[in-house]
Image 1 (cartoon, one colour):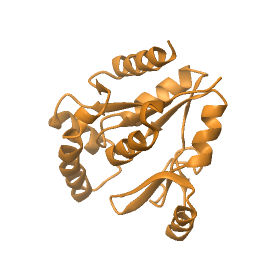
Image 2 (image 1 turned 30 degrees about the horizontal axis):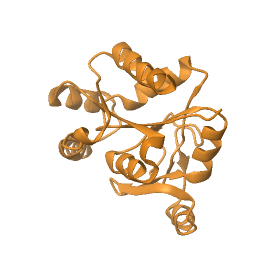
Image 3 (image 1 turned 180 degrees about the vertical axis):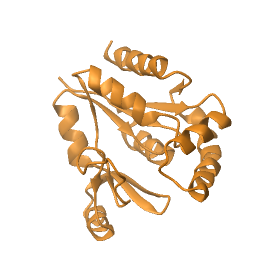
Image 4 (image 1 turned 135 degrees about the horizontal axis):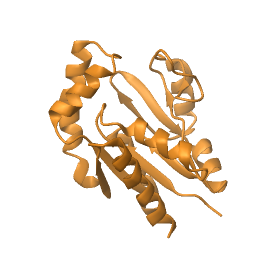
Length: 186
């Protein structure tokens, strides 16, 4: 039995991680793929759980060795998906949920085609997005403004995704993602 791959993208603050965390906690057949990054670890994060935190040198070495199926530089940090991690999870029959930026999601779609399902998560409006970014207390005002500017670019890419989830209420967004997973299994 093989699993499926679900790529979830959308602007920072849309609630991608919150949705995925709830789905993974309630579904034994679902697991989140842990990406590799060169960004600094935030308070409360754990290496190997939230990300595989790597130095720039380690990341670039693995990149040159062809160990990533996709990688991009976002907000001055490298992010990538290890081929071996993804292959092992799918072979084990897991529904792999991947939270990526839109560039990584579209690159994986180009590479894997119908082997994956693309999902774009957004908020009902820009004010909700700004409120969520500020309430996280993880970024300064300049970074929040940078993320809001980038969100406009990301929102223009939503039409390239198979499914769009508007995260106005977390429980409904979680139910929508579960429905998409169940639809793929049918």
